[in-house]
Length: 163
Image (cartoon, rainbow, N blue to C red):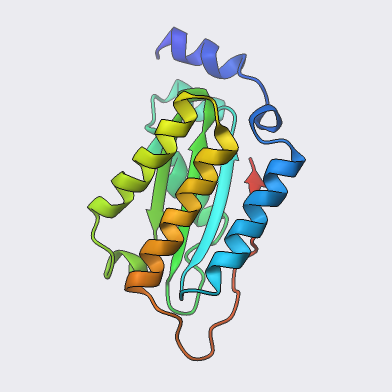
């Protein structure tokens, strides 16, 4: 167990400091507006600190993001087109988890570029701007590989989630 990491998580400010209510409303609006352009479903979740069982067990952030993906049922769309954008403030880490229907069509390296856009903004502590850039880039990518199909409907809530 890394004591420095544990302390960083234990004392990290709440997510609402980086993402106040007005920022969360803008994020929700960006998700809702962009989803009309493609067949994907974007879910944004932010967490200030990892749960103790992840820190003590030395688990990777990716494992936590995959657990959040399952818990929030991002996988539960008719065409398997959910995408989780997970931000862990305590480690300044971003994970993007696409469902099977997305992963089968979108080149895997595309997600790394989106994370890069977000990290650039996060380094300047422009949290909202980073997330909005990531959401817009995700919309653009999904629009390219998953154009809207017949009967397209909003299957996942657009509201950002604070864990």
